[in-house]
Image 1 (cartoon, helix red, strand yellow):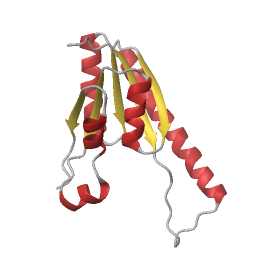
Image 2 (tube, rainbow, N blue to C red):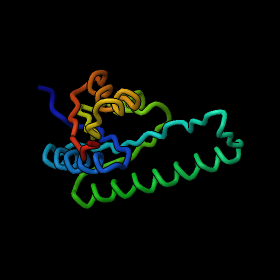
Image 3 (cartoon, rainbow, N blue to C red):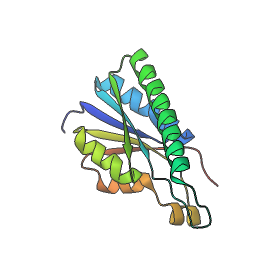
Image 4 (tube, helix red, strand yellow):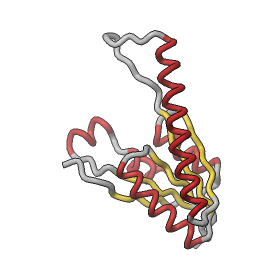
Length: 150
């Protein structure tokens, strides 16, 4: 088996992601691996009945970007305090596609991602980012089950 030197941890800042962070941090610490902490900003979607002018969309995007970077930097600081070398990445687009692209870009040996544990209609309509990442990633993926949505 190839040694694990680079770990990509993907987060949406949910409770499921927080549990996955603990796993990613423990793995990185025990394997002396570099940790990349990544998050993805999905595009703002509106429907015709919810018109938002371009200035409002730009403001929402800027606020989401600032908030996400603040959260990523907090996680990186926690990693450094735990003795793990960590960097942060904020990507734009479809979460699963961007996590996989980030995995390739960082030449990650392992991906750690949380799963919400959705079932039934919520899973059908919302899909499973963790499932898509697991099936498409070029390296092993560790999924960490978060809280249940039952």
